[in-house]
Image 1: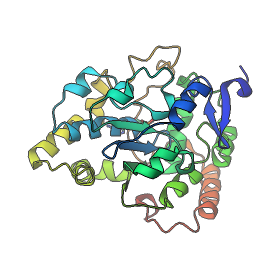
Image 2: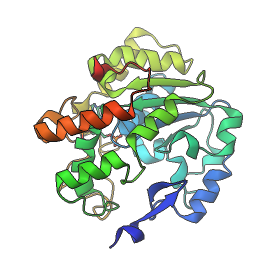
Image 3: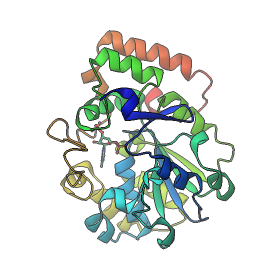
Image 4: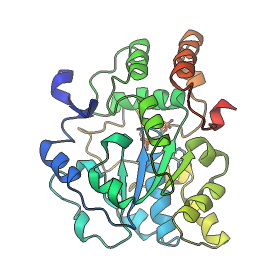
Length: 288
Ligand code: A3P
């Protein structure tokens, strides 16, 4: 299958055509947000699934029922993939929790009017690239990613599904009204998951006892999530995700890019990063 058949352009960004149909995009554009909706926003491979475990556990006060009974994509559905309204988003009780991989300027009009709470999770782009390169072998919506060097250039040019990591991060960091947006990184979650859970709970105005926070953090450890069939994508049909090629919950660490990129590739990455991020004031853990 060719790229043209697999991807379509939405506001200038490649999106997988099989998931983003004209019907689902119309639904997305007309979506009615509620004030107490919660949206997890990520560039792919930045900690989406992890957040789809953490946020429902926070909102349920630590009750594990939803993470044990609902696959992550049903528990926290993608806003822009709701082809047949299969998850009854309108009738879900508040607070509803959604996920999206879309850039800030791809959000629908209702989002800017209602300003629901957002948790924007970022990850070192070299690790995002590494994770994506492995994932591209398993996910059916990827055209053969080709040799690593070629894929690296495509990634840095934004010629991959969901476009440029740089544009995604800069767009969300430059959001006009930031009061409803919390910024957090995958690296902070790795360094101190309990503190990250507590901070997310605070942003969501959900006070939790230390004991509950500890229980949630433990449940969301990589080794525990990997065992959870509702979160490890083992329920996804092999035609969509073939985990014999690469596991979805693959390594769950920071700095794996050091095992993946050659010295020359890492240096090239740094050059591009330095140029594209030169005006960004945000202090990333990975830059320190
Ligand atoms: P790796 O491929 O580096 O292992 P997303 O859900 O946004 O697609 O991101 C997937 C990445 O997050 C994968 O990274 C996956 O292993 C990692 N991940 C998922 N759950 C995690 C957890 N509980 N702790 C650490 N990393 C996790």
